[in-house]
Image (cartoon, rainbow, N blue to C red; front, side, top):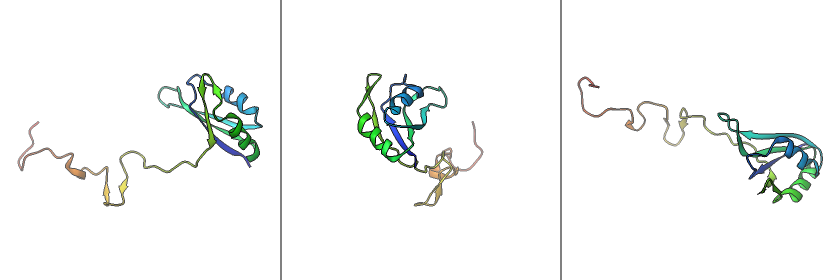
Length: 120
């Protein structure tokens, strides 16, 4: 069974091929995913490397955690499952039962004064 590893503290110049070559020393690399900023396309400084077996993943962790790559000490650990997070401001707060996207939330969208027409 393949095991996914988190690789952090990468130099922004590190490439997927650099990681594939480095982790290939510990075993068979199934995939490499260098995480990039969606707007600029530049590296965010971390990646996920998938090794073909648990034994190879453990070997990669023990031999490469703290390894100096491009003058940076990389961090290697088992990747945790991605946590579900609310997307944007359009979700319900279960504790107060308010929608954060509602126009009446916290009186933020109300312009002062009492009745009468609004003057801009």
